[in-house]
Image (cartoon, rainbow, N blue to C red; front, side, top):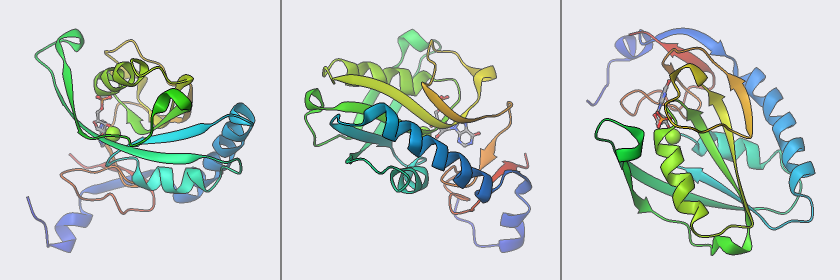
Length: 182
Ligand code: IMP
Ligand code: MG
């Protein structure tokens, strides 16, 4: 639904959970982890649109080694269980990933269902290695057998908005991560 009422829009923001400053602090550490883990290796940071676009923009600027970025957009379908899911790739990578160490950069891992299917697809293309880095991890809600290799923040089971994360396509541009008022 298209929104134009600013008061109604602002009333959706319950409270700040993680400030923009705290995010930047953890991004600096994640950048160092990437620098150390991938020095001397061909690195491709893969972001899944749209939620991770702001995070990737900040994270890649905290990386000081050579790296490429790539984008994917996917649509997943589930009929009940994780194993019965399938994923359509709406936008695919241009790179031949068999030449790269691939680091998936995600905004949030919730049930993990979509990401586990995407990871499976990417693994079948035989990258030199495949790891997952996520801004937020919500482990309480996990359904798929999937663990991030690096999570900047672990959060409880609340619906969050801001810093790329949306509710009905709004709030992606908030500088902080906030709890959505349901
Ligand atoms: P999954 O349940 O791990 O497959 O998560 C799929 C997608 O749901 C994530 O990539 C997000 O785009 C979205 N999502 C999950 N939890 C939240 C949230 O708390 N706020 C906003 N989007 C979310
Ligand atoms: Mg996402």
